[in-house]
Amino acid sequence: MGYPIQRLRRLRQNKNIRRLVTETRLSVEQLVMPYFVRTGKGIKKPIASLPGQFQYSIDELLKELKNVQKLNILAILLFGIPEIKDELARSAYSLTGIIQQAVRAIKDKFPELLVITDVCLCAYFDHGHCGVVKNRKIDNDTTLNILGDVAVSHVEAGADIVAPSAMMDGQVAAIRAVLDSSGFVDLPIMAYSAKYASNFYGPFREAAESPPKFGDRKSYQMNFANNREALREIALDIEEGADIVMVKPALAYLDIICQAREKFSLPIAAYNVSGEYALVKAAGKTGWLDEKSIILEILTAIKRAGADIIISYHAVEVVAEIMRDRQR
Ligand code: PBG
View 1 (tube, helix red, strand yellow):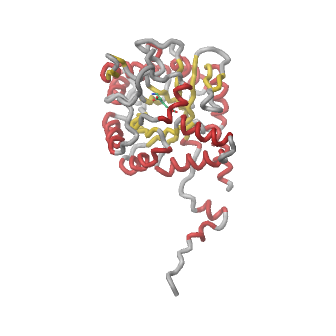
View 2 (cartoon, rainbow, N blue to C red):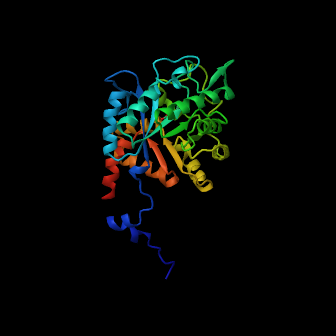
View 3 (spheres, protein in one colour):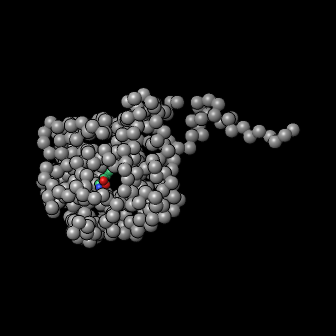
């Protein structure tokens, strides 16, 4: 007799035995659905490069959230499109800003829905950068105070979690300090820790109307060739007081998610970003890929790599697929 055959196929021979030994199961509870909100009434404006996604006015968003609640999705991530962009990003921390109004309306109607707000300035500055511009450079330290004001204004409106995404050094510590001194010691921070300067954000910038007017974001977001630096970013955010750390984008960065999972014990969020969504939608539309199964495979892979929380524009549509998958 030669070498005995190791029969791994024993555990693959029928549906139920496969289900019994499935290692990774996607669950609705870990999904976060992003939304874009703008001023006005009765607006549900399609975003061309994100088929199936819209810019909503608050009234229309509230209608959509009824569905979200029915699906048992626990959390949403909000992005605002302000009416006015200026040199001080005033609408980002105004009491009557779009996010502040939207959060109040949402928490009033859906008190249990977790509302996470993106804390950044690119959609609010006239120049479209995530921080204060001085001599055509992004000034780190003056940006920190503004980010703190934005975070507090979101939390005062009722936000459950703030998610700083400007990639300024020290932003988590700055926000933690001002939240604490404003009496919000229990308010969690989900830090966009390893956020790469990625070409996968293209459709988002159309959706949020936030592309930079000059230059790019490479002086503050990470070089996509770097790995160790991501672990350093995450470690620093943890030291600064982050409660949840994020890797973004997700699909082309599974190696980073995986290493972060091995190295750190905090919950890890992964952001399956706009460009990843757009690729799937385009291939689905042409019939080149089976969209529904691809979505399930991608999100399961992100979880398998080690993500606890997955932020995805697919969140709403994948719920039915998760339920169906349970039966397969
Ligand atoms: C804000 C921000 C961006 C994304 C999330 N927060 C865009 C950017 O950094 O240019 C991208 C999300 C996506 O592509 O889905 N800074």
